[in-house]
Amino acid sequence: MIDPEGTQLGVISISEALASAENFGLDLVEVSPNADPPVCKIMDYGRFKYQQTKKLQEAKKKQTTFQIKEIKVRPKTDTHDLEIKIGHLEKFISKKNKVKVTVVFRGREITLTQKGRELLEKIAEATSEYAVVEQHSKMEGRMMHMILAPR
Image 1 (cartoon, rainbow, N blue to C red):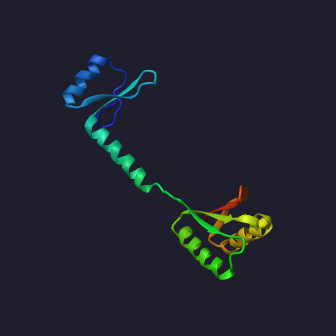
Image 2 (image 1 turned 30 degrees about the vertical axis):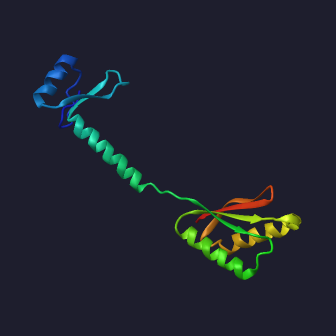
């Protein structure tokens, strides 16, 4: 058993522990039930629960969250349009979001898969200073994907 100041009182019977907790005007809380013998502490249980919820809220506040943003291009996307898309990509990466770059093939463009792969490599090379390729180009149906993450 442990008293409110944190000093160990040793192994005490349950009735003695409850009586000493009542003397302090606090609660007897079982801290680790799996230990042999079980460890109990005299504390204000309401205050303890309040502190636990505050710790959880702090941890949740410090937790980083991110979204996966998507940028779609076509195999025949021109250089200026591509530069604008890369600008958007840089903005997403600066906000700590992952970006999924998708090359969409329509109609007979499906024969231009090599050009689509080169386009994704060009984007990866242009963003290499602030982004890293998390998943390399992968073909799914009529779309080719690549995922970029912040460096």
